[in-house]
Length: 291
Image 1 (cartoon, rainbow, N blue to C red):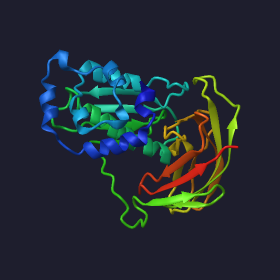
Image 2 (cartoon, rainbow, N blue to C red; image 1 turned 180 degrees about the vertical axis):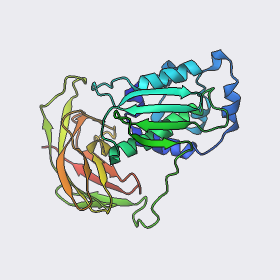
Image 3 (cartoon, rainbow, N blue to C red; image 1 turned 30 degrees about the vertical axis):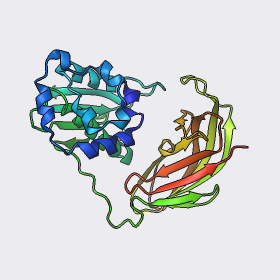
Image 4 (cartoon, rainbow, N blue to C red; image 1 turned 180 degrees about the horizontal axis):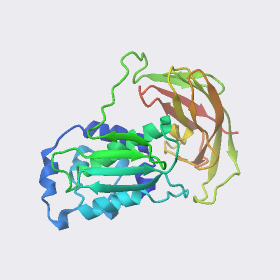
């Protein structure tokens, strides 16, 4: 369940921010639905949470029991055995406390995770019988008790109007070429199939590895994760990321780092690789042949 909720967290954030600001009267009507009309956690597992429409959200009506079960499921290990949240629980009908499974305090990664999860939990709360036209207070702590975020209203995400590449298709680029995506300068190189495998996932046809170099050309800390790349095969099918020793880092302004990205692929090249900046929607594309 946790894998389902967190696997495409940035996509979910976009969906939730688009529909979360509307106070639909249907939500209030569904609160009064009978037990037979409520949504279970098992029902959620069958839903395509990455592609939910407003109408889809209006069909969700979690009972108190199922909402608590959903919070409990967030603290379960994912398919890789990793636990991002150590606990998520209601302390009263209007307050939810979430404990992230680290002692990192006020890091950029924790702040981003808390903000994104606030949107997700808040949306499910508003489609449960707990919701009575009042926003819940959601508190995020780390394992030391440090409060990362405490919020009693939806987070508003403002676009940077000064960014010249907002929503812009930057075009297609070559391997070994430095590509500036809204201040994140990316260089991709050395695509290859690797024999490395992990013990948790099903055996893919091939595992594609990419060398990734990143420079932070902004004046703020940058969190970068190679899971943010989307890889499509020659049939236009979206490939899955693959859990090996992939690059993830907090990068200070003006600094750089490098590492690898891994993707479970079909073996049907060439592959199209896309990177989209979270804040501006500026998108770059690479076409990759593996020899």
